[in-house]
Length: 425
Ligand SMILES: *Cc1c(COP(=O)(O)O)cnc(C)c1O
Image (cartoon, rainbow, N blue to C red; front, side, top):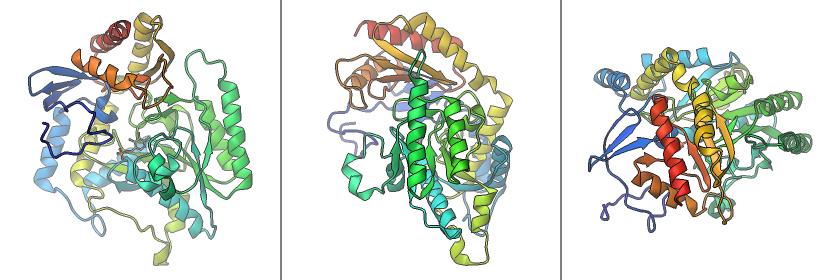
């Protein structure tokens, strides 16, 4: 494919190996053009929660395509969107009542940013600043980059991005003795900003920062954030684009941490990994600030494909699959710990083990500085692929985030290949 015209995402085209051509997928497996089979240990780009080519999702898509492929979402609605919105709300904290559709995680975040900003404007308050976290990743559009200013990729865009109040993220792992201190420091930094500036809200990936390297925080930190947000009357906004739909071992990180945000962004698993789809869900209080006779108080945002019926139809079925089989996402946390103990705790190349639901992560010890551009990542990725495993380290962070249909035996082979590969490095 050296002559392919395609410019690929997050890729230095000059140095990247040729892409592998996938012929078909089934469950956790990807089948390549040359008939090789690859075990997808990271759910593609964290979206494929039920495995590839799920027959129920395929059927939903086919039925819906025969009926209605798309319709303008202003002035019209349709059953798949109505059903999906109602079904979602049943599983979210009851404070969240209004569902705004868009197409991907970044736009769900943009919607949340604009909604939160305009919320205060509509109430007659000019508030300017979001509190954001070191390492936070919220997508690739300008607003999403701005609240993700703590991530490593945006240096070249600095002057286009708006300012935020950046605070430390109290990341922790198994056996961390410093976690109380880290949380206290983060909370103190947040409170400083809450006192000094006109804060719109606190913007966070709850429980797990994904792209930053599966950095995990404790539920009690989110509970402390909720308290601070209430005390200082600012919004708490959860980017659950990655953590949603079972990833943390419960349907949503807000449920796992017993906290309710004022706005939540959902995308990756929403359509079961089939089609681009996202929602931004807000509280009734936020919705009511826009609900007025004055047309200028409305929320002026929308996309050509907003509320696409095909995507919504797969979303409904994906949620049904999660409802029917919670064991799929609930079983993985204990399996991760079991296999970490059996294979990796004793591996001298690894440290800082952590697990949250379906996600397991650890750091590879290297001579180089820790971070996304650590040279160990492409090396390991190539070795895992040679062995038939799709694992894509984020710099020196190695993580496993499989589709929920993975069997215990299949998962065990992932741990075996990691152990073997690192010992032969
Ligand atoms: C992936 C991701 C996004 C961006 O979603 P896209 O669909 O890639 O635009 C935003 N926030 C988080 C936490 C993510 O993991």
